[in-house]
Length: 343
Image (cartoon, rainbow, N blue to C red; front, top):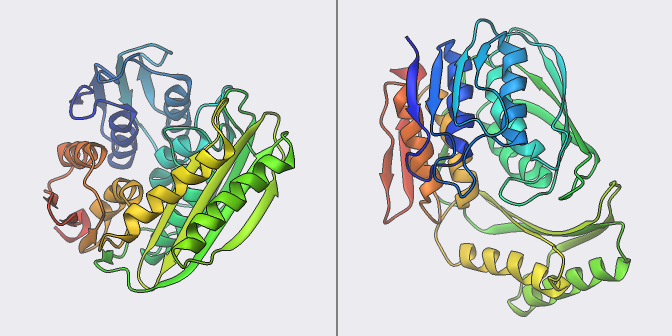
């Protein structure tokens, strides 16, 4: 019997769909999701969600009903789990990162190594950009025993997309638990300013503004200015902070009419907010780790700077599939769970 999930729960966004499909594929359990993205202004499946469905359908030989753009109901019945080489083209600037997140935990439980190529948006709003995945998420997953290499060939900005990322991964059957309770001292700070098909001075303005704001508070980051290959136009400021026992990343994207200095300010402001807390990891990483913690062999715990609706919703969704309960402390930002492999 299919597990029924109401997509309106909590923040009512696409994360419910992605996590539900990942878990259904891992557990080889059919799932029916209704009111998909019911909490959004434009509900239903968008192209990037559809590509996640198609990708997992190919990987698991699934039977699918309702897999069309705009659909608010989906039935997904996985029948297998096949490692291999896969290429997925979203066809828009839909997030390659979100598709990657959806299929990664599934292929990690395959029998053989896999290679993935995904074409679409690599640095777009409302999703983890390529650099966040490569430099923040994957290093933490490596602590749990996960080995993934992630590279970028072309950058994809909104609205053209056309970016291309590739990943190689080795399956892992037993995940180590995670403990991120204190971050320790700041060891390194990296500042990236990137742009595509725009005057270099825009990227330099972003760099100068961010560097000066950080320097005023006695932070001296390593800097890099990139002219990124892409079919479209866009800009980015990305700050990566490496602590003794933690990681955090802060992203700001340019857009038409947004001054370069404001792009820099947005990333800096997020970094400053985080550094004034006792958190070991940032809020965006926190909700991305929940599924891996749930699958780990033992109790995992972290402290984040903010308990988001995204995190609470993702925890609830995982609990619908697995016999576990996340312990979430709104005051301290502490989240812990006993992984399914240990129950």
